[in-house]
Amino acid sequence: MASLLPLFHTFPSLSQPYHLSTPSSSFKSTLLFLPIASNKPSPTLKCSSTTPETHLDPQLEFETSSSSSSEPPLSQVWREIQGSNDWEGLIDPTNPHLRREIIRYGELAQASYDSFDFDPHSKYCGTCKYHPSHFFQKLNMSHIGYTITRYLYATSNINLPNFFQKSKLTSVWSPHANWMGYVAVTTDPEQIKRLGHRDIVIAWRGTVTYVEWIYDLKDILRPALFTNDPSIKIESGFYDLYTKKEDSCSYCSFSAREQMLSEVKRLLQYYQEEEISITITGHSLGAALAIISAYDIAELRLNVVEDGERSSKIPVTVYSFAGPRVGNLKFKERVEELGVKVLRVINVHDMVPTVPGIITNEKFQFQKYIEDALCFPWSYAHVGTEFALDHTCSPFLKTTNDLGCAHNLEVHLHLVDGYHGKGERFRLASKRDIALVNKSCDFLRNEYGVPPYWRQEENKGMVRSGDGRWVLPDRPRLEAHPPDTAHHLQQVLKNHRAASEQLEAT
Image 1 (cartoon, rainbow, N blue to C red):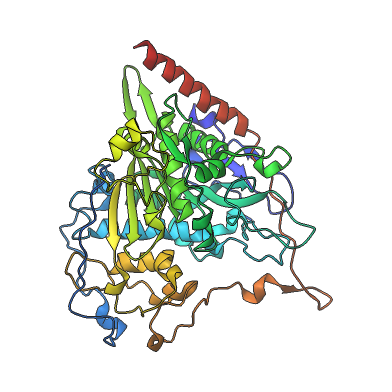
Image 2 (image 1 turned 90 degrees about the vertical axis):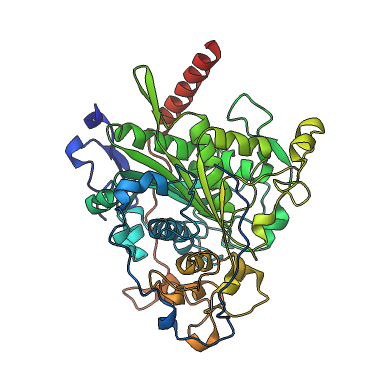
């Protein structure tokens, strides 16, 4: 039956609505477009005797030894790397496979920043700058082996007023929507072979500014309402961003939640005969959305495969970077009960992972009593396994008072690349270019000669027209949602209702 299911969400190169086509199942490994756990305490981190103040040649800080020849290929251990054992024994010392996968998913999250139009002087402010079929090519990530199947949008009608980017012009692409990320799937045969399975990835865009959105956190918990248990609660701003919609806006006629669920359902249905994983990634506020959407997928049993009287679960994993707390202790317990695996990569000098829940959180001995007996409305708990890093251990970074540097995603990836274990010398395992650290901040030591905030689009996207004038070219207008969105969303909700009724009956 797989051959009868739609594969393509075709995004045309012209400003026409995209449509679905129905190729045979033999094309499942080709492009989806036509061309155009446990909450372990973090260990005390100690730097090696080499201090950041010492001037070092970057070449001396690269890992010189290659991976052990006895190391099994990722295709044989991918479930462990995806967190089946809560990354026990893989973080300290850092497993080479895990390091590479964390960086790879971090780069997929970083792509949502690099492709977003922040320019308030552009009528396209708040959109993705690139066409889906050219997305990874434009970002020099063609090697990544994924193809985007859907863009995700959210409405500005939420209580996080400093999160959305809006154009200062009167003629804009949408007065209500912002591009929030994408859903993609592995399509490159070599990547699928390396992974040992097909991977569906959901990447959520994080916040544009560092401090402002923290102040916007209302710190008020509200029932998630993805199940019948009202005691499971998440922060109200995150909830609104994930669930709100705006009927007057074509891009937000379905909520970000509905867009994501319908697309995951479609892809799972199409690839139902294959081994699959669902991996969700995000940085900052995007990390919060990643955890919420992973919980949602598992709570709705979207990842449960029924085979007669037996059932199995598709792994759902979150690679979270610099994320805040999302929900209360009941939320944490339910996420872990559902088998969702969350690896939270943090910098110990970053403020964002400490909020909300400064007063009552998972470190407080009597949190459960306060939450259950006193119904304390500001009780938050981190989910999953923490991978704590310390930017003062990197000899490439300078001392700074800029709080945003500690929060920067590229900095986190730099730290993952150089971390080998407690007390071990910081050395870059993959020779990842240190210039990436300064892509959107000023954190590299000056002697490396890398200018701060260096990444920008050539001529800010302006091109010269035939008559010699410099203009911002029109972008193809994409259809907001595939026509089968409502169909797949109805399937998700229908299956969830049926499963819930069956569970209640038993």
